[in-house]
Image (cartoon, rainbow, N blue to C red; front, side, top):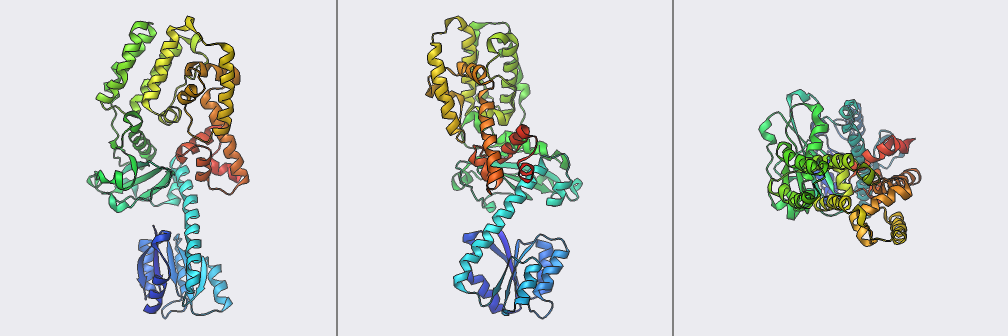
Length: 478
């Protein structure tokens, strides 16, 4: 919610401003009202509201002086001037000081809705720009820009930090009522239309021992909550964000809503996964199916997380490619991080299914029954479909079933016919379209990310930079 205060030496005028607008509907909350300009200024310095409605002529100092003092302090506070004087000079000076609007009182009721809509749009745009700047600064090794954008890291050596990431079920942004949770975030950042990041900060470590009421899942349509470890080092922020995201990504494995604290269990998973690798390397075909069937059960029984999934994937890829390079050189077997795995596979079950198909393929290399011409025809149809649906969620398992081609053969055909993997092909289409939209539209960057198929802006930003060499923001400026 955007926090608003009203400043006027006449109580009736304050009441008139309060009653003129449907504040809540447009995302505003009145947090203070003052007939004393000095008290209002002290409140602005301490509480830093988003918006101030102020009169011009008041006994102590004028509304224009209040604006000037606030701007001189470097405070990011917006103003709307409401005055009983229709003189152009007043309006001109107010706008010169940066006022968003100049209105006459008593306020015209017919003008109230257009004004509040205009203010809501302004703050939405402003919040989006700042949100994207903070995101870029959080992923940068240089914290100077982050210090400029937020006071989060002021005197940080005296504080503890913890990160929470929430995923919602639907694409519509869930406007969290923070009072529903047992924590008050120091910083809130949108990571996409379904994903929100909260950074908690406290001098007392115990304050960050977060507890959730399970009712938030039904009340706010939340899919998953990921909670990082606690650190008193502000330069660990990137690590904490990654931990929270990995924890929230546990739904990839169990496909059920939940609250997940980051916990590394690699020491538990490693012996089992290393055993699978040994079976692959020693080409014990008769044991492959059995151990893959038990893999999902093992992960569920031991409550393993996304960190262990990444280890599983990368170790098996290394063993498969190392043992069967000639047979698998055209497969999409690359080392992937947790974000890339979630982008490629819908669930852990589909990831396991793909690995099982790979092993089955290795065993049955001499028993391929599919006609080469049929495969090429269906593959051409698949590529046409991808070209027109790349903005949707696309998984190779679903596409291979839809176009009647084994997903292992699909991997081969992409590399042989197009010179790139399925994931590379889809990513190229999406980033190319994103570049067009950045050049030729006024859409915000998070809107563009969603339009090209990335609900997670944080991930889109990383992919775009990897493909283009610069962030979306810098690309648009250039």
